[in-house]
View (cartoon, rainbow, N blue to C red):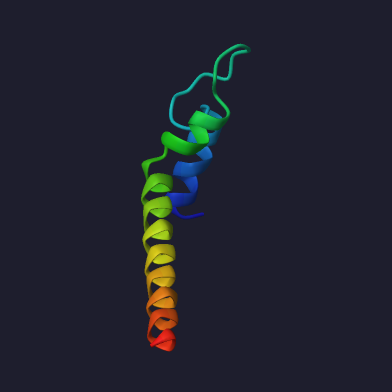
Length: 66
């Protein structure tokens, strides 16, 4: 088992980055979205790739209209 897998198992065991798993605490969605900072990086990269693809498709469409 490599170091990254151990780290994610430890984060999951402790509530994804220190968010408590007590009833009444918001540990579900905010923990999945914000606590491991790598998720934010992956979301940002995904949004950038999506924007590039959409811009290229729009440029192709505009060239075809001329």
